Amino acid sequence: MNICVCIKQVPDTNEIKVDPVTHTLVRAGVPSIVNPFDTYAQEVGVRLKEKLGGKLIVVSMGPSQAKEAIKSCLAVGADGGYLISSNKFGGSDTLATSYILSEAIKTIEEKEELKFDLILCGKQAVDGDTAQVGPEIAEHLNLPQITYALDIIEKDGEIQVKRECESGYDMISTTLPAVVTVVKLPYEPRYPTIKSKMAAKKKEIPVLTEEDMPALKLEYCGLKGSPTKVKKTYTPVREKNGIKLAGIPAEEAAKQVVQLMYEAKIL
Image (cartoon, rainbow, N blue to C red; front, side, top):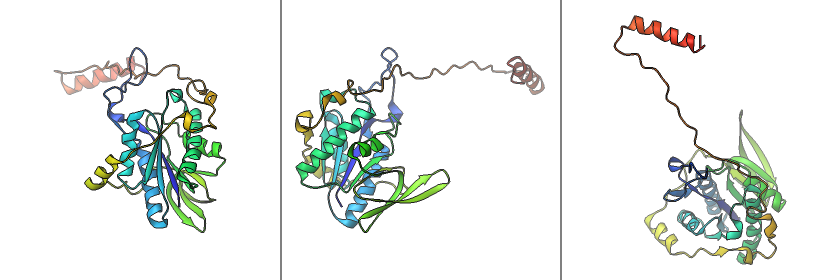
């Protein structure tokens, strides 16, 4: 089974800050990680590859530093990786991003001389939380899709997906090729060894630009090809306006609390 895993390098959510003037994310000096949901998609892909054979290729769209995210995936079972990068792709929303990735997947199939049986994505990226790119890739490639996968089982040229839902889970089957988005799994992604990290560090990551994808239409890429417009982002201001009652008997403090709640129309 040949598998493509789409990953994204995102800022560590514990370190995210918003510029108060430009209202955009401050990325300078902020550590980056592989989107956590994508690591679960990677783990599912590696397990399927180990069981069924085939090739697993990681694809990421972003600036040059995203190569490090790809190499971290190579260290835990991926066979190869491609970075999709160009100034023309800057500012792409989910629709433009999914379009570029879908064209990149076609190009990679030609370069690798294979057809992907399964395309895996994390259910969503923690920096955007839209959960749109995976399903949109399926639409661009005209492939069946299943979202919120907890597990994937291949059988007789089809896959059975254990899909998370509000009341538990569903079992859904579909033919291949297909696109599946993965949630947090009951098991954790594997860790790299020192040997695998050293081997991944030495590997070259090919970069694909618009020049490598002749069928790509630039009017559907970048800001120009993005119908979604972000007007403003900001960090909510936390106001501290509590009242501290100290140095008085508990009975008197209780009376004052009740009075304050009454004045605030809570009671």
